[in-house]
Length: 112
Image (cartoon, rainbow, N blue to C red; front, side, top):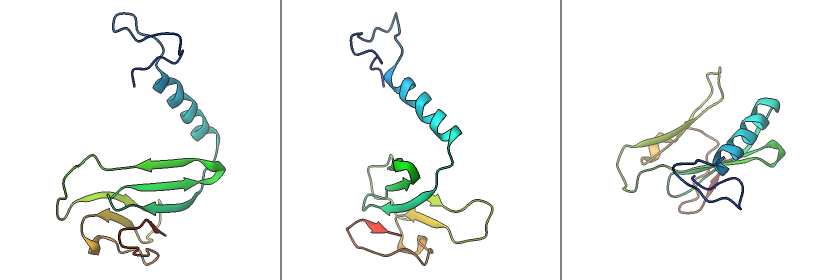
């Protein structure tokens, strides 16, 4: 996070350079504001993370910030806004996954 956008600059707490993260975030925000992305695929992993594969080649990876297995923990809830459709709930209990499109792949990545 504290790398300078210009690789020839080194980060200094007193004289802050333009950060690499800020440049990337600004570019991503512009792309998200000016395009309509469609979720083409959702992948789940065994560590309760997920990947959204969006149109135009954009990929969003998320992972929980918990290092222990906690029973009954819900990490993510994915759904289509403004509908009464099924939700995909990613958590530590199997019954938290009511989406009929979910394919249980055991320890492999599951594709819905």
